[in-house]
Image (cartoon, rainbow, N blue to C red; front, side, top):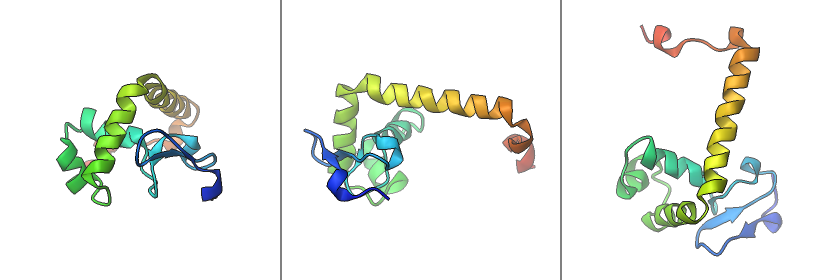
Length: 109
């Protein structure tokens, strides 16, 4: 695991980058929760900041959630690019390894 000595603090309270940890993506300090995880809970999960802190990521404070939201607003390209890169990776993996990818809907029964 990457050392805290390599962690780069940002101008946003609670938000850091650590090379070798979560691909160096912006994350909540002291957590393995990326800024884009918080954004997914809000934008894709329809959760409020309070719901994110109390339900999705109860280890986070409301201040940490708001810091992630603020970071995203000022770094949309960086975070959106990470979402897009992951989506491309998943699609490529599905094409190259269809035998390893099951249909979740049919498995629910």
